[in-house]
Amino acid sequence: QVQLVQSGAEVKKPGASVKVSCKASGYTFTSYGISWVRQAPGQGLEWMGWISAYNGNTNYAQKLQGRVTMTTDTSTSTAYMELRSLRSDDTAVYYCARVRGVGWFDPWGQGTLVTVSS
Amino acid sequence: QSVLTQPPSVSGAPGQRVTISCTGSSSNIGAGYDVHWYQQLPGTAPKLLIYGNSNRPSGVPDRFSGSKSGTSASLAITGLQAEDEADYYCQSYDSSLSGLYVFGTGTKVTVL
Image 1: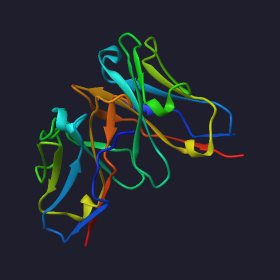
Image 2 (image 1 turned 135 degrees about the horizontal axis):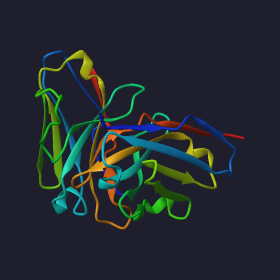
Image 3 (image 1 turned 135 degrees about the vertical axis):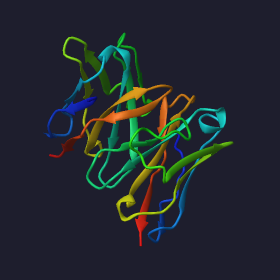
Image 4 (image 1 turned 180 degrees about the horizontal axis):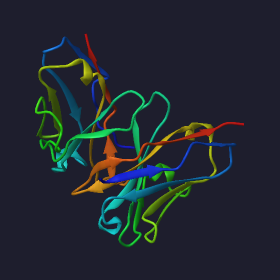
């Protein structure tokens, strides 16, 4: 079955970087894009960006431009999201999701909790 | 950042019908882009509920239905069940400079 499995929880200090992985299985990885979405504690969903697994093209949310980088490794069917210069308000659960059709997300990874604390 | 506006909460008794609105703008829903809906049960990842305004993925009960008109969309749940208590989010494509996709503010459905 189609599945996205993310890396484990991370604890980082302010100013550090974090890199979250998302390993896909059950489908042809390069046929779909991957989006990253985050959810701060008790808050709603925030779209972070999208990467084409076919050619590596990216599109990032304006508020994260310059701090986020999304990449893929087609040899292992894995997507990565790196966020730099972490702040306390980056504390959130980070999700990856396969992008289908004209832009719906299915399925989603299980989520990765990133805690930024001194 | 553009957002789609949803009511913070709706509630209903078991068996009742509830609806959740999702109001956008001319850069997303009003521009003709499709609306999709997700259900998020407590402590879990979101799950696709409706795609392309009104289509249900395999396995989603037909108690859930979606519609779209103008700059808004709606999700209806008929025959409300206890297991439907969750957060619901709408999502669409956005042509503004802030990014490709946008989510709704989220609605908590409570089964009384």
